[in-house]
Image (cartoon, rainbow, N blue to C red; front, side, top):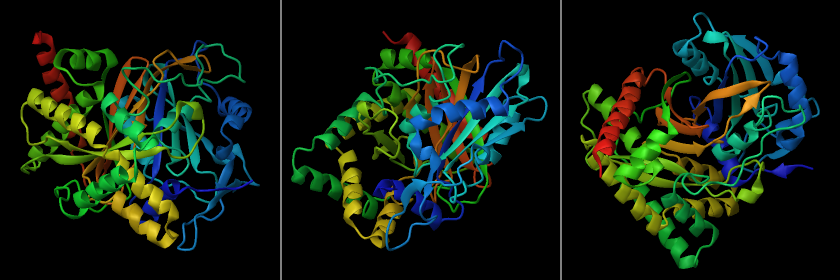
Length: 453
C-alpha cells in the first residue's frame, strides 16, 4: 500500500529542486573500535544483517512514485519492485594515515552528492583504513524519509547493546531523560507541548502572525554565510565529554542546549571577525528544529519537527555574557510558543495546493527568516556495538538549505558530544576558524564554571 508524503516531508524535496546546490540529506559517520578478531565486518556480513533487520524500517525498501514534486500533487511512497541492497551499500577506504583530517575530507565528498531519487532514498558505506585499526559506517538518508531524531532511531537497526548480540537483534531507543529530552531542551519542550495541546485558535493565529512579521518586517541580518550554494561540502568538528557540558550548565545556569547555542555563537563570531566583518548588532538568527515526535512512535519514519528561531549573540565578546543572553532568549521563547507559528504554517500547507506549498516551503527555510541551522540530537547514553566493535564516536550531519553556507549538528552519544559544521566548500574555506571559536568559547565557559559558587 502506498503512502502519500506529508507537506513537511515534501518540503525537503522541493528545497532540493529549487536550488541545484542544496542537498537535503542527513547522515552520520559512526566510528567503531577495532574488533576483537582484528578485522572489520565484510560488506556481505553487513548486507546479511541489514536484510534480517530492515523489516523494522519498511520505508527503506520504498521509493518515490515520482522523482519530483509537481504543482499537481505530492508523490507517494511505494514498494520498489527492483529493491536490491547492493544498490545502497558499498565499501571504501581512507588514504593513509587514516586520521581525522582524511576522514573529514572523505565525508565532505560523500555528502556532496545527492541521493538517486529513482531508488529508496538512503545509502550506507563501510569505510576501512582508519588509523589504529578502526572502521566506520557512514549513512546518508534523505530528509524527506526521516528527521534527525528518527535517523538516530533508525541507526539502531545495526546497533546492539552487547558485543555478541544476535543478528536478529537491534537497539530500540529508551524514553527521553529529564536533563536531555528527545528534541532539544526543557525550554523547547514546553513549546512542543503547546504544539500538541494548543489552547485555542487565537493562540495559533498570534504565533503565526509573529512568524510572518519576523520574516517580512524584521528579517535576519545579511552575512557572508548567507550566499548562493555550490555542490561541494566541507566538514569540521569539535568534541568533548557530555559531562563537561552538564558541569557548565550546573555551574552557570540554563540548560545543556543553552551551552551548545552559546558555543555555536562563539564559533560564528570568530568566523565573522576572521573575515573582517562586524558581527550584526543583536546577533544572528538560528533556526533550531524542535522534535514533536511522541515517544510511542518508536521507529516511525517521516518528519515530526517544528522550529524555533533563536537570536545568537555573536556581537558579544564575553562568553558568560553571551550565555546569559541565550538563557534569556530561550526562556522567552518557551513562554511565547513561537514554535507553534511554524507548526501552524506547515499544517496550513497540508491544505494548500502543491504549487502554493512550494512557496511556503521556501519561505520557511529562506535566508530572510534565519542565518544558520543548529540542531541538537540526543543519542543513546550507553555503550553500543556493531559486529562486536564498540561505537566510539558518531559525527552527525544536518543539510544546507539555499542561501545558508553553514549548519551545525550536535550529537551526544555514550557520554561524548560532537559538534559537526557542514559547510559549503567554496563559501566557507575557513570552517576550522569557526570550530576553533566553538572550542575557545567552551574553554571560557569551563573557566567560569570552575569558579562559580
